[in-house]
Image 1 (cartoon, rainbow, N blue to C red):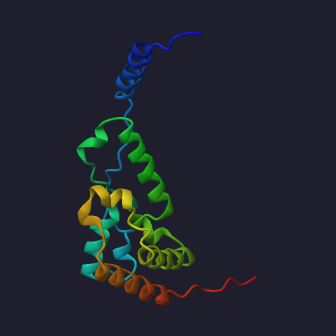
Image 2: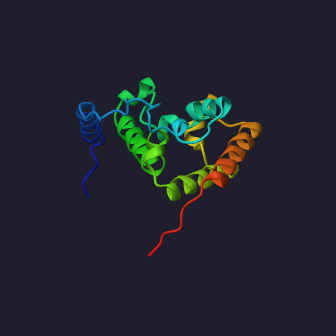
Image 3: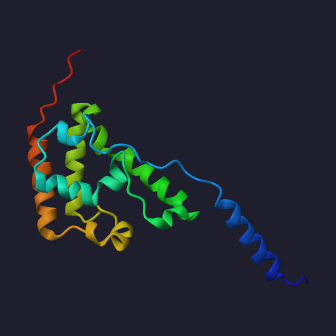
Length: 159
């Protein structure tokens, strides 16, 4: 039976981590507040906008503020994948480009997810304490999303 050489395994792992440092994901450093932003599409009061910017925009807009540790791989790669998924699900910077039906659905999801404490993710608020929502902020966001949801009239498609 062969003896496991932990020294060789350690050197191989260290070499892979060093090589991985040369892989740099494209960062999400565009402009968050564009002409297609949600604030240019529906009514977003200043207090709601502040919550969105603090608790949501890093993963759900065209601009992410990256902490220093995202320069270390594989953390940066994982973080960029997470941001890409978040933007694919909901991008506040592109909200105006959504069809009315999708805008309405996204507002409904916002209310549901904050009420059920699914957003912001606990893995995000663990490090970004200021992004954690208070009960008052949850109520404010959910009420705002529900109010705006009710305002959107989706025309029925004619055949």
